[in-house]
Length: 255
Image 1 (tube, rainbow, N blue to C red):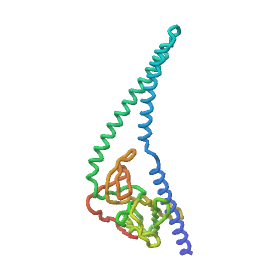
Image 2 (image 1 turned 90 degrees about the horizontal axis):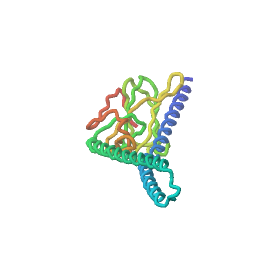
Image 3 (image 1 turned 90 degrees about the vertical axis):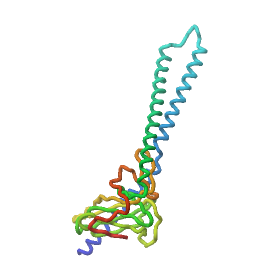
Image 4 (image 1 turned 45 degrees about the vertical axis):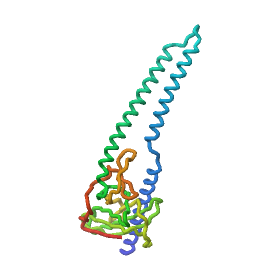
């Protein structure tokens, strides 16, 4: 009876981990396919500027060809002129602000290039597989059962593992092989860590991933670190260190 219950819990745990990993992969795919808002803003500002120029041309032409015996109401076109003048000033202000932001981001990127080659730890569901190696760490309770599931960019589960956690920090190392032992290509994968309670309730386990910084790029709203083909927002990074990071956990597993 105990064995049957244990197998049932393990199956439930794996299913929860796989579902979470697939969800993370789908979220990541949606995020990468979304268009940048900066391009839309630039287009909108350009449109406003063109409309302002067109308005002035039409207004000048209308004034030149108006009926002298029935001139147009000066209050009307003066009000419109004032509104468009305000728009022109706002367009100019936004353009200069965008330039200042761009200069600041360029400066940040220049400073950040010094991070290339260092190890970064981040709170993210993106697991960077580099040189056929990836690792994550989580805090566990002695004897608790955890399931780790990894999905590729298409949302297909390629690896899942069930293990018994130790008290304190646990480190799981992946050698990049799938459930059939095939070596997978380096890249960005999505990962989930789940545990199950004595009552059979599954829950997510917070974890961090570690990878080597290979580059820095400017994202939509944040600087992003490149770890191979994986990109992780700088705001998700919890630690950066030089050299090879050593495992400080009480448990270490590899797969």
